[in-house]
Length: 404
Ligand SMILES: Cc1ncc(COP(=O)(O)O)c(C=O)c1O
Image: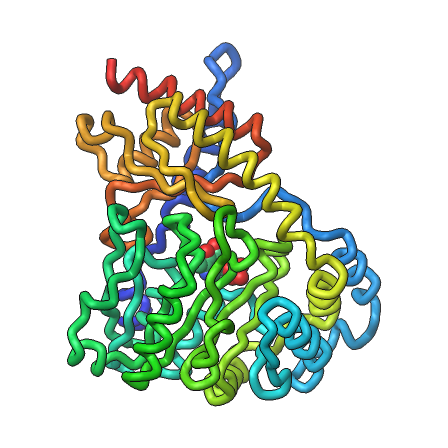
C-alpha cells in the first residue's frame, strides 16, 4: 500500500505512544482474575485535557442553537462573521487593539489545527522554520507535513527557559521563513515575558520571517502577566497569534479556536483551510461567542483552582521524592526525572512506561517535546486535588521501592 514519505517523517507522536500504553494498562486491569490483587485505577495526568467544566452559558447557547437548521448546514467563511466580530470585540477589551474581523480573524478547529496547517500555507518545501525546543508536538508535525526544514532554539532551565535569540547568527536568521513560539509555554509551564515575544517580533520584522505565536494559555498565568503578540504593533506586519477555547474556557472537546493576524497570513491560512474543512457548526460558534461575551471571567475562576492544585501538588510531589520548580502557569508541572530514575538507567520514555505499569499513573515523557525534553516529564493537573495527591503518594511509594 503506498504511504507518503511525509508520514514516515512524522513517526508516532508522544500522545499516540502514551495512548497505547494506557490501553495496555486498562487491559491489564480487566484481566485481573478473582482472588488476585487488583491494580490501581488509571490516573491519567498525561494530557492537558481538563476535568473542569466549561461555562454553563456556553453550553446553553450551543444547546439552544443545535436544533436550528443552519447549525446542520456547511458553514462557509461569510457565515462565521458573528464569531469573528465577537473575537474582534474580545481583542479590543483584552488588549486594547482594534482588529478587522473581515481581514484579520479566522475561526479554527483548535489551535492545534491552525498551527499545524500554517506551514503549508506559508512555506515552500525545504524552507527553514525555527521552533523552540521543547516545542508543542504539532508545531514540528506541521513543518514535517509541509516538507519544511526545522531548526531549533534550545531553551535551558538554568536560564528560566528564556529564548536566547543571540544563539542564531545573522545568516541563520536570514535563512528562516517562519518562527513558531508560544508563551505561556507548554511543556515547561513558564509564563514568559512580553520582552521575549517583542524580541522575536522585532527579529521577524527585520528578517522578513512569519512569526506565529501560539497562545492558548494567555489567560492562565499564575504569576505575572502572560505575553501576547497582539500587544506589539508588529503583529500586523509579520505576525499571527493563535488563541483557543480549550484551556481558559474548558471547551477542548468542542475544537474551537481562532487566529488573529496580518491580513495576508489570515488570507493564506483561510485559502488552505478552504481545501481541508468547512468551519465548525454555527451551534458550536454560538457557544464560543457566549463564552467570550458572557463568561469572560471563566479563566480567572479556573485559575484559582489550578493555583491550589499547583501549590498542593508541589508539596505532595516534593514529599514523594521529586524535585519541583513551582510553575508560573496553570495546568502543568514540568519535572526532572527523580534521581532514582538515573540510577535505574531509565530515560523519560522508559520511566513513564515503568511508572504507569507499577502505579497506574500516566505522565508524558519529556522526549516527546524535543531533545531538550529528555530527562523531564510533564504532569497535567487535570484531576481533583484529592486524586492528584493520592497519585503523588502512589508514585512516592514506587520510587521508594526503586531506591531501596
Ligand atoms: C501550545 C499548545 N498549542 C496548541 C494546543 C492545542 O490546543 P487546541 O485544543 O486549541 O487545539 C495545546 C494543547 O495542549 C498546546 O499546549
